[in-house]
Length: 358
Image 1 (spheres, rainbow, N blue to C red):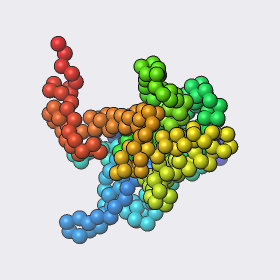
Image 2 (tube, helix red, strand yellow; image 1 turned 180 degrees about the vertical axis):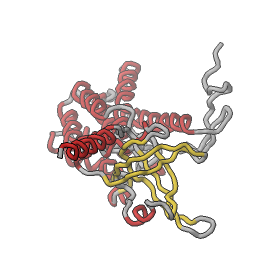
Image 3 (tube, rainbow, N blue to C red; image 1 turned 45 degrees about the vertical axis):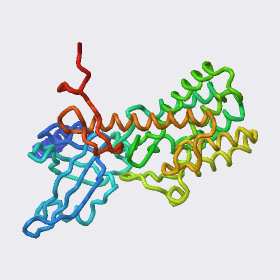
Image 4 (cartoon, rainbow, N blue to C red; image 1 turned 30 degrees about the horizontal axis):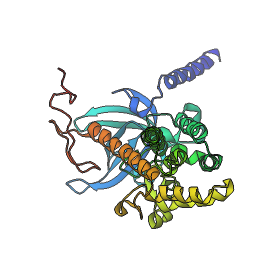
């Protein structure tokens, strides 16, 4: 009896030790040829056909920083599960090995299942599998809220902006700024809006000092409010899903500038905003894009709107430059023009792409 019991306990112990030796890593941190557990989003699945007519599936698993695209052949033990059960947009826990191949890194899957609530105890969060801002959203939120509270002096304007932000706090923490062109990731709206607001404060202070005789004087509070709310309509224009950001019906039919003006109208009476400030703030929102082909029915017709427009445009385009320079793999001093700007960017003559030293 003792021998049998000892044998059973040893077997259980060996199994426990084997399980303990399987590390849990982020998908982007998988080590080549090491078996590990990881969480990933199935972001793409496409049925294709080999040259001899056999079906196979090309799949992509990703987290916020890495993605693996590889085939599931028809004779794979996972072929049937892939065809019938694997769902694009679903999150999975995998036990897999990262393999380096001539086609790039791929995953050799040993086990796979959809994630469950208990996986959160091991650190799983759906946002960990999505591209996101380089900056913690909670920190961006606190900085934006502090600017509103400390820099806007007129109570009705400050309350209007604060009430809108607080009501949509959770949506704001995750919303992308756009579908694809700039800041198109989790927290992108917040990152872009904070950056535009900081630039607008700098420009407003600069031009108040340069043009003290401007009549009527530049309304610094409206510049800040317009900066914070210029893209607020995107909270209703965009619908954020795990694999895509799509236009809502309201977004497709009306656009974010009209939807943003509606936000101001809904909250203005609650905070006692006067008629002229409301009109000027509505104009800031509907005209901040400047051109009809960009979605604005009117060009900027106030100095405040002019500042917000160019701060917004600069921040969006600078992000596009940054993204193009990071992602372009073409050799030489110029990037390709295959980017949202549709133009080549000069990176420099030296091999590193930086500015030559004297």
